[in-house]
Length: 458
Image (cartoon, rainbow, N blue to C red; front, side, top):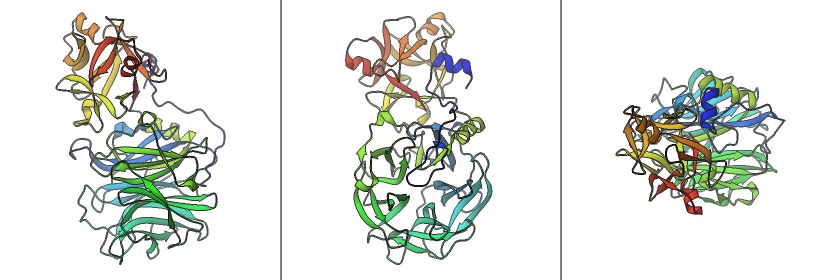
């Protein structure tokens, strides 16, 4: 993004982080200089069509809540063996400071596909990926789903955990040990509560405990142990869910005692939800307001890892920020601005086709200090008002069209950290939603101000 573009949009776009002081996680999973986060994921659209990709995707964030997809939300690397696709990726910073990427060997949703292997890449900086291989975990006639890893200091090895059907006949969390992510020890059962569990995620060494969160009975549930020994974990948290929820991801704030728990619904183009707590030991979680976080579009089953300021800035420099934006509603934060049958409106995510909710914000057609909203999937069309209603029309080159399609960004009328958009040629009117349809209206009430406030993000 150029300086001039950022100036006229005033966007909350991803920008380089200034060097910060030393920060460390209580879980012992972050380096002293870590100051930001990277998310890995794959993508699925609602109908498994456009927007679906079973390669490794990355996004970055300074706060672990608002995310900037890298490489235009395209994959940065894709498996070349096994099922030729991945699900459930995970990034671990190894003891030497470099990274290893693990992922399920599965492309798509054929749950009958059995792989005794997982995908593995090495990376010094998440800008290049080398040494691609598959690592065999077992000889059983079952899958190896959602692999993750952590350093087991007592063993002096990495533990690789994953979901598989053991002799119990249901899914359990397995563990293998490795020093090189090339070969692994024989599998052991890490955790089996007596019912089907998948998607294990660990927080190691937090106030004397090791925490394991997993999907069980359609919820995100917690177990813990004072050791890392297989079989030592016992349930202690009844868990949380938003409908059927899977893929728990524990994240520690880098500047407070807050922990977040991310999860997503187990459907194509799943919706991420987040909860927070001030103490893992409590086992209790409070749902976060969806205003406070935004998942990358079409993202599924994420992993989140801390990174340094330099790594954050280098990832942005290497892969770039998206050329498009999404606009989230302030008072209906599950809804985003989109066009449907050429009508401007706000609809609940996920949106199909998803590109209906992507916008290229360009200098205003009537005044370059303003902004116009050009459709990504209909690039000759812009949002413009007509009889005060917003619709998606082809730019006819007239001054009237240019004026109708130009708006001035202002601090959000309901929240100054968000944005509102004032009409160029009707300066007493702002873009707002009414019954989910977009229009320009005068703004006077608290509800009006909320209806006219949006977050410009990705």
